[in-house]
Image (cartoon, rainbow, N blue to C red; front, side, top):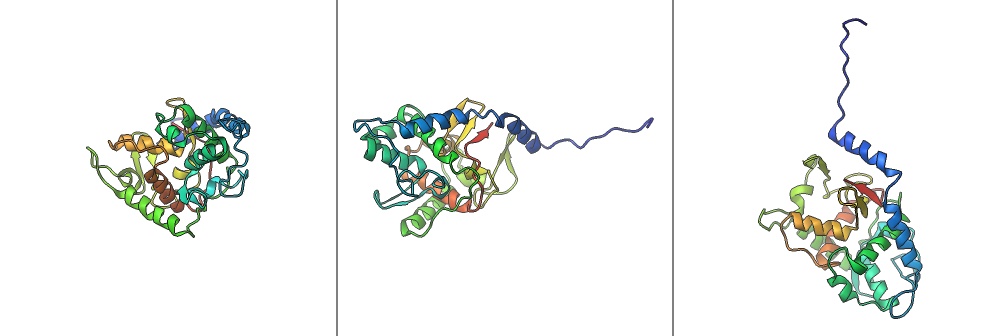
Length: 254
């Protein structure tokens, strides 16, 4: 019609980012890390020349499906609450004879830690589409939840930041990145339910341990130790709060 004005409602930044991720999703490079992790799970390695196929991730020896969405959890054999990465490290030590302390001391994301990230990607993929339901029946699991909650709200560093500074309220954003509220279930495939994930911006695969490491960097805190109690406790806090969320791991991130 002559003189008619043409208008279109502009897409929100969130919609544009979601569209960008959807375009990349079919070729998510995380698939390469998943394949590497599956091969490592089956490969006989270490001083004991053994595979990880007898590793108990909480569902019984060798059972992978469904394990990820119930981690971190308490394990009687280590008498500790462990997340996926720390549990894999324990299995590498007990089954393959690798040195867990040496792995933990490796620079983040390198050497055997890179192998743990690949293994975590493989394990997480087996639970894709399942809902998070972390156990809290053990006293130690509940204690770690409370420890994680305290760590989440602890402020410090040169900027006086805490985890809650960025993830303690709805509708927060830094630059173009939405910041989910991790004090509650932020929704399917968001926050805790999206990692491990492939970071397009740096071409790296990040497990939750690596994600938390970078969060500490942004807070101007000292880096946490790999698989340290504080990182596991934060995982318990976020994971319990994410109860019912659907896992989309391995995800795809900016």
